[in-house]
Image (cartoon, rainbow, N blue to C red; front, side):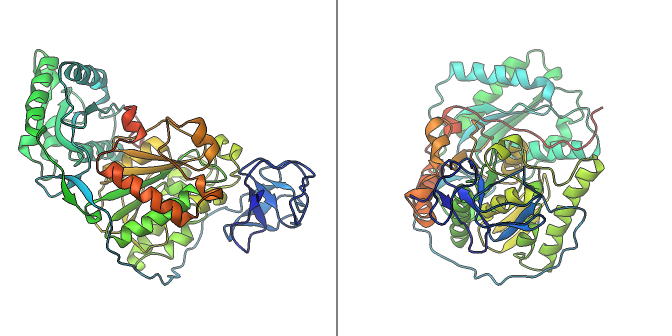
Length: 491
């Protein structure tokens, strides 16, 4: 069995598939020192200041001389990124494939034309002050109702809705409005406190194309008993939606959000390219995909820019990247210091290393548009979304932008799930077997047993099952959370 994997013919480092011990005979050379699984090993002598190449891309520079067979990581390499970059549009020719989907999909077509893949009853608090009341109300309702004829009753706690200003307040309102009108909810109760910045009346007036039979709202300060008021409204909504039935839908009705968190050295070899294969197939079927995590595009953004459909989309990507860099600068943070301790422990050394693996989730298709944070997908195809790399904030933004499902790769493992079904994909078999209760799919099979295309065949069928109603791990465990991206001051 191969002990390491060379990803691209031009690479001067490879990735250890298993732990490599000093002196071990690796066929073409002997290991100079220990290299943990997922970490990089030098395939040749590399001089100080020479480029380190992985994925066929420069991922950093040697900080000292490196000998063939040596472990390559933070102790002997560093990022090559610094300062601002002048971008140029070098559009690559991409064949646009159109294929007929072989899968049968079923979902809930709402009155406004949107399609949900779940039929859930949601209670949305407009402000963090009432999140505990909302949880209590939902628990009381669930304890007195057998809701097996719908997909669940949930509320989503958050911290905001008050003491915010300007852009942050607008973003909070937009995200909560998008959740309140998300098609995975068959009906929604919006509950305010009454004195918050996120006032209930303009919030409701700002909702776009809602079915009045499927929404109720009130302020807790306006009624004597907010619990009984909410329970009565939930009862009305439940009776309205409980007989909803699935009907046949198509990939054109669906949006998939892509996320990676707790990445490791295998993320860019197994799980992320697997999602790339998935994305290309879905788009060929007429579906839609959203790629976000802007700070995890730094160092590989030029590869995305050259896939822009036209110069306008290219300029929108440039603006998205530069705005996020300016966000770092405005907050006096280092733009290119991104990999977390968990990333580094898993074998990722620099931001370029992380980014070249991260963007593979978006496959190889043309990029059709850019979505601002809080906005929703409007251009079909593959879109980029302005948003953070933080798992909680990013997945919430993906759901808010219209994704009915998030596909989430991780090499370190996480139990987290957002407010839409979150399909967790392990990058390696070790973490998958260790935390089977967290994961839905093991992309570690791509290292030994299956090709990426074979694994994608299996993965596609499983995702279709989840679309059609099979619960994901986060749904089984009822780990459904949201987090709103904060950029400014709190009063």
